Length: 207
Ligand code: BGC
Ligand code: CA
Ligand code: CA
View 1 (cartoon, rainbow, N blue to C red):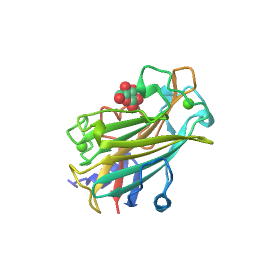
View 2 (view 1 turned 90 degrees about the vertical axis):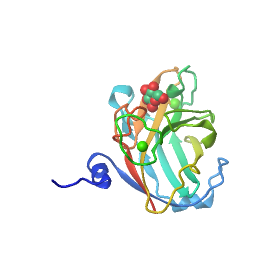
View 3 (view 1 turned 45 degrees about the vertical axis):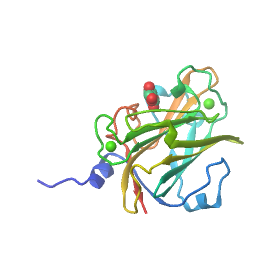
View 4 (view 1 turned 45 degrees about the horizontal axis):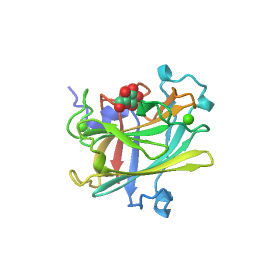
């Protein structure tokens, strides 16, 4: 029987992206180094959690950069009505970054897996065995079309190297001002499963 490599598995179920090296200053200002990163579109609706049309959804252009000790992510989010009314942080206008460091694509979270969330006001939350709030630096600022989040994850426990492949998922939550989450957009897998399973994340290759 043919052995399926991790890359083939991801190609069959998900999406792929590459990240180039770079270390931006995480301050909410878009440094020049971000122009070297190719934007990834986060615009696939999770149907069961989306009550508005595709044009009214909140979506994002996301750029990723890496260095040995840091994964940096810039989110430019379209959102016409900003709100953090809900008592559930996942229902705030917010972005979620999911990292499967060892790309094991496991059915439940393992020690290296984490969910990082930042809302439009810069509030950090998250879940997963690998999640530690002290690993995250994030700044959110309002923009003409919504908000941006610049964030970095400390990777000193498991330093990054060129050629590494990570499982990656990206999500945008949208409250329309009512306190309800009315749309959720994803990059790879359009189901509400990324917070408990890394199976259907996309693949990020470090260049
Ligand atoms: C999901 C929520 C879940 C939360 C857990 C979010 O990504 O959409 O349904 O409760 O993660 O942190
Ligand atoms: Ca993992
Ligand atoms: Ca909103």
